[in-house]
Length: 221
Length: 175
Image (tube, rainbow over all chains, first blue to last red; front, top):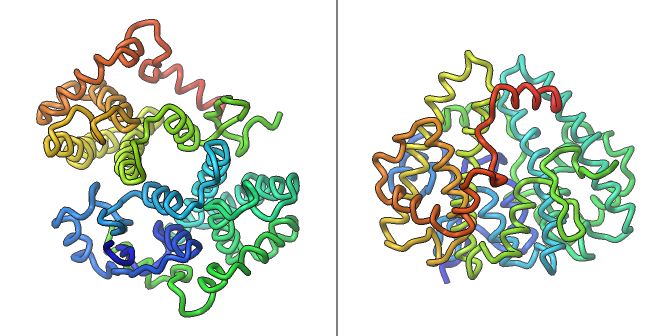
């Protein structure tokens, strides 16, 4: 076997963070190779490591996987985090795709120019509070089980926790309306692999500050 | 009436479920009908190809809805991506293994989606495959598969390119 998976990305959340979460939840140790400047990206492009010239890229099991969803599908399937049958997987996929959409809003906020930020913030908070979180609150309320699907941990639970914590960073009081999400958050955070990932010193990345955004703009734009 | 989990379409009623989210719907159909390869590694390859094709598809889809002043630069970008980022990848895949299908020597969702995108790109630039001989033969070969051939015939449920009228209607519904 080829050892630990190796993640290629910049030292920040971006599109790699859900992948880090999934690996951590599965209890899989991984290495990271950070892109610090444009030349680092160019080098990867030139040596044919990036199928579509883009990162994230994860070296795993002898493959150089690109495309966030392809990477996450592989990890989730390998570590049994996609439910027990096709129908459970369909539910999980729906939830995960909704969460990707919300994550996209949260992620793009950081790199927007100042004059676009206010409007985007209002829209993303509105979507979080009125389109996405009510769905998951209802799912948990309706079946009253600990996990979103099939009474066992799946990638949907991991991604929901990730997004809850990100939204929390922007508007902590949002969850006063969502008691089931509050207990979900506490419960999933307490699971050993997740708890470890939430501790200081883990490979979880903090929100991007101006310095990181600046670096990202130089590398990718 | 609660039919749309996130208040959005597409929505497909299938096997007692109301599925939303394009990828969730397609993952279900592909898995049910054995179009995702024979094992996890084949599936990973297929998923990478499909995701790249989704990205290109997004560019093609978006073009129709842009206001006139944004259309020209977007067109240049999408044609550039098609010809220099995406199609070369698939040309190389076919060249390297010399087989009929992209992955595992059998039809997968990646082949279907590649054909779809090739045909869409050709609507914008008919000679776009000029530099890609293997994609040309791929196109002919996959188009000849009975189910696909049927879908490509007039009267099928395949939709034509979006017209101005469709766009106006869509904007009224969704905005």
